[in-house]
Length: 129
Image (tube, rainbow, N blue to C red):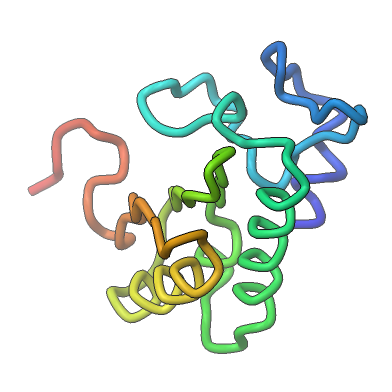
């Protein structure tokens, strides 16, 4: 997660991916060009939205029972305080635990849980088998 922020300066970001103060939103901004779901453009620079994202991220990091994959998911908070969760996790327990953390922090408990359990098809393409 810290690595995400350290590497953020080396990656090309779409226009608007920086807060007005010039600080990168590296911990929440997917940089793979996927516009089908919430992206950096959806991440609000409002102080309350940034606070929500950071609070969720910190609570996830602090959980010793969550996998490295779970700790590296994308957390995106829009300007209304709604949260989108994206990325792979190891189990349904992790998926549910992260959603609960997000609901506890999101304004009005608005969470779009797009987390995928590892082993399921995370590419959107054909499944193996």
